[in-house]
Image 1 (cartoon, rainbow, N blue to C red):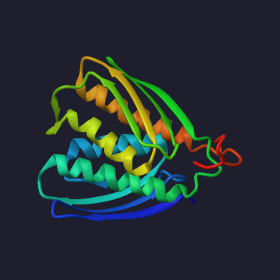
Image 2: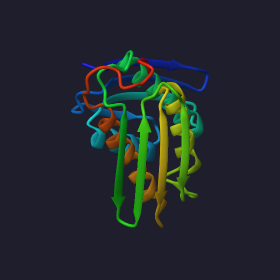
Image 3: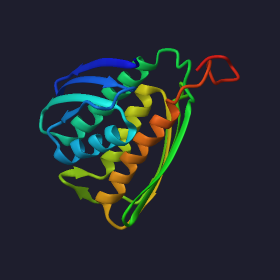
Length: 187
């Protein structure tokens, strides 16, 4: 089983996370930011990834979103070890009403984010700019490359489509393949 436990304690947040990349039946998320909880639940459900997450934050949504991205990224990296036996690349195109999100990722050992999306407003008390910041924090700690392209007229739908597509693309990249999929022999 590819699982990991991660904690992060700063002056701004205290986070406890259990991650199970192979079994998505356990989803228990409480960040103190209901809209962010909803997005993480969408990622978990559509990626078939188990997440048990509890955050005690200082009330600043930016701190919570950033630190959850860091902690989730650390757990993904830890759960994959040397990344042997995974497909490595994953992608998904997910529509939600007026919105369409496309996510492609590479569990490469290199961190990079390209974010082309039309989200500009605050949704449920969460500033839309935090979506990109979450992805950057996640990618830099998981050591993965993430490309996002999304559009829509309703920011809630667009952000939700991004999180769903991220979950599906991640599950795609985690599919079993023999060996290490790299011409260098390591990831």
